[in-house]
Length: 630
Image (tube, rainbow, N blue to C red; front, side):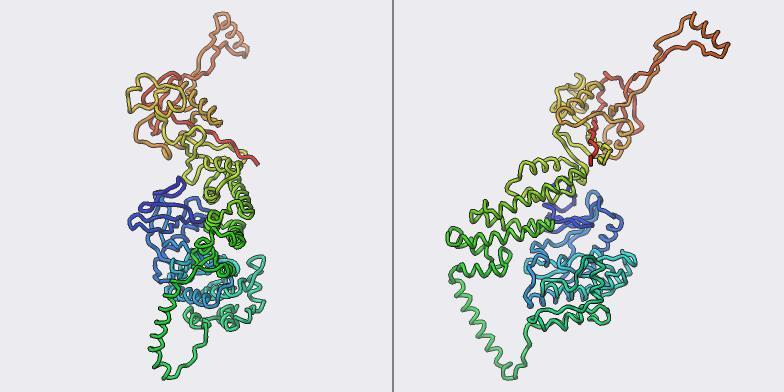
């Protein structure tokens, strides 16, 4: 079940909201109804660019992940097709985000733990012949326990099954993280993934990529020509590991993920213990357990953190949940109403707003959605909703939303404004200009093609307008007598009032009057469909359950004699014909003798007079859509 008209219908799942959109698919937060659990639902939409190639990649990704079963690889719950025939698969919902959202550099111990999990996952994938080819922070997600999981095998290929979506010379992956051979479109093996892990290690330790440049070519050249950069002195133990991981020739790197994991620098060198020390270890362990219990008991009675403690949390960037402890929760617990904490409250709000600003400028709507929640929480808890930094953020977001909404209007496509619409719903207030744009965009058709206007009619887009060329939409269902009565003061014929199965029993002139009235109400142009337009939609769009006729605006032409020559004119004409002239002929003109009413089945059609009514005549209208302008 879909919560929004533009969301896909997937049996067994209730979709709640859009999480993100990539080049090949959309990811939704949904609930699997049978087990009542949240899932991330990945759907390949039918209107994706390069659909054929994306379809192959999507099917391959699902097939590859289904073969893998590892605690550090995001698994699959279900796979199938939506009601519209689109491919989907359901996987665990991981609300803790990805590695990209973590402030870098990271602590060396945490780097080691993350890399150990990633390499363990790659060791499993490589043993099944699967090369990932897109190791990067965005593809390392965290579950509720903080455990890193490898995700997104969308550009992977199976060496064992010889599955390869891209052709030789075509580069897939992410710039800055690809190995030199992958950047050149050459054949790769597991050592290419290990190079990407080396890039990841360097970035987590230093906050920067080892090689960077304005484009992929510049980065690839730097990887080969420049020496491997040095890490800060405090990470000197990591340099030999990085020198081997980032070697340009694959043969100089680690051979396997398992070998690379074993080579990870340890946190501290383990000192050899004498036998007597090992014998004392059980007693030492017991004493440690007692000590831990004492500390835990004392901590239960420990006072609330001081402002200095909160300052330290702020300095470490531990601003809000899920970090425990965090500055926001600690300030709310004791200092929410304390005037002496006002300066640190403002600094916390500024730091939270700064994170939201970074996500906004990067157009990372998922990260921005996550960042706005603690901003709103802090502003409400501390009475800072009118703080200058918060107001400036709202102003900046309003401008970004306006830009996306205007682009959607320019393309006559609501789908590409979905994130902006969701963001607009999160803001406390919108400027009148943005609110007006949002209303216009919400009236545009989404991926289903359905739309509406001020008349209140539901329409289905048939032809999208483009520069210099108008489009059109049609009412996807015949109007009922009740709907006609709600729209205009036009009554059906008396022979239909008591017949619940009848349609409108309107004459052609009344249907045209209805179209004119709707045009006046909505400011758009409504009219009857032509026979050509009806043929486009009669089988594909409208229901065929009942043999109904639909008025079109195409009339049957009839030739009528308006003037017949008299005897003198006919005689003169015969004389002219003897000398090569023309005989006298009757004058004629063409007029409509009736309008074609064609059926939901093309085999059924007949001509109706403009005043004729019938229980079998339904009302279907076309709305013209003005051509887009430059």
